[in-house]
Length: 136
Image 1: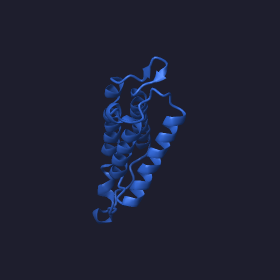
Image 2: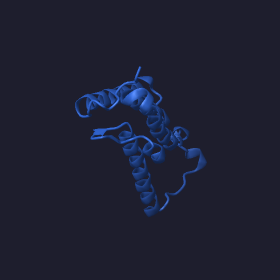
Image 3: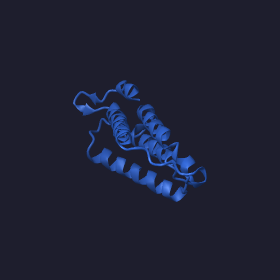
Image 4: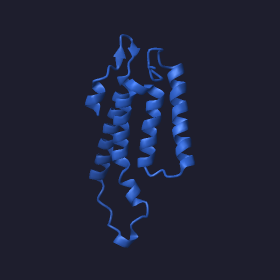
């Protein structure tokens, strides 16, 4: 995903380009994965519970990693076409569903809050050249 993100320019002259967020997100996923791997390597594996003691939501959690990576990929690929706000909303939706969020109200609140934060940051901090919306 980082390789795909580098295909989009992070800077356009002196302004932020469409690839900056994708590059930062993919680097963040790499860093989180490295930290997680280091913690796992340092800690001895806990004793395995009996098969009947498996948590009920364990099957939902096994998709959280691929969903997070897919969200970063979706964000990087959709940013040029859909703009920052919609791409962030799509990525947040995929990541939340992959993390096991099944309550529609909680999912809507999570995605809505992220979209509003992205919109506020985009309007106040990013230069006007950053694509917030799709180009119609």
